[in-house]
Length: 374
Image (cartoon, rainbow, N blue to C red; front, side, top):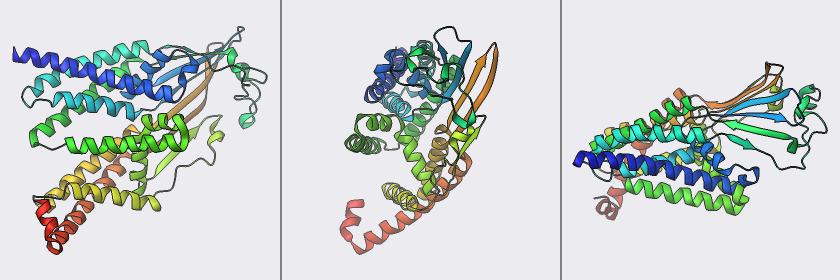
């Protein structure tokens, strides 16, 4: 009977995680005013499917029977949506220590099934607001006016269809739920205290949303809701010296000429150092200092390596006519995950040692701090 209850709790946790992801995706799209494109529910499903590893494929076919179409894909994971689901799933799985493996196994079956259902819903048509001229490819990189994107066309003449392939979503959902389940097992096995860290992270995220809204309006807040983890990854990796690269190939590669991410180092180094020292101070009480530094280095390295891997962006664009397809753009933005892992591990370990030394110095010179640390 207890095992059956844990199975249902695991299924409920998976459903709650997908619901949280859907709510976060819908909120972000509303802030970005994506409802004007139509198909809001299906767009929300597409964002959720992309948050577990899917990519959106799209095609633009003009009205009037023109035999030329534009097809492409966008690969970017809205980590804010993925993180919302991970927190909800992990929180519900860890409500009780006993039965965790049963709940995790049930969630590992239910969550991918739900993600596949969401991916099947993530297909439809959207129509950009009319009245805007579509110069498009016309005149870009020396190309002539081509079919649906030629001069004189209006965007309301284009019907843009999108889909999210199911198999990448299934594979990503399986990996996603296994990672969350593995982290929950580590928390339960070593009795890590994560509640306080989650409240702090949630408060910081809310503060970032408010600042973005105040400075850039609802659209900026929607972007932060989707991509705040990307921003954190970029700041920390660049601050630690991990370079980001922009790649572009194809006939339209010239549109990215001169585009480059910020150079590593500089002021971001101080930001990364402050963040790592704060983490070291939070982890710097009790136990062996070297072991604490090693744990912090491993945690920071794995986190930054994973963020660098998941923060990669790719865009592909091609033109099809008479059964033939010609690629015109293959662009990407990425950081080296192995470099992020190595630099993050070294930076985290160094910050752990330095923060531990500063805490010991404070406990010697200020006894009140020592009493508080106990």
